[in-house]
Image (cartoon, rainbow, N blue to C red; front, top):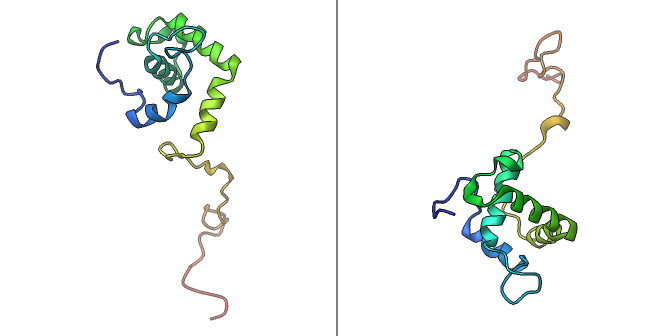
Length: 124
């Protein structure tokens, strides 16, 4: 992979939090991943872009190998375990509010009769 940072790559701070929970490190059973950070960045690229695996840029490795490894991690529950570890310290970088449940007063929504004058109250 080139040394360039891609737009969707995780930050150094996020990698420091994730790395201790990654399998496939030297000294662990099951082999050593070629580049764990590149693999995680590849998965994040797919998730953020919504692209199919075949469109994964070659900088992230062979799309088929990355997809197979991703599926193995899903079956082992590793993604869930990593997210459980990270949920204790959320950074709120991608916090979104779903406004589909917010209701507006009829007069503010352009109901028949127009808006009420907010300065006038019934009590005088």
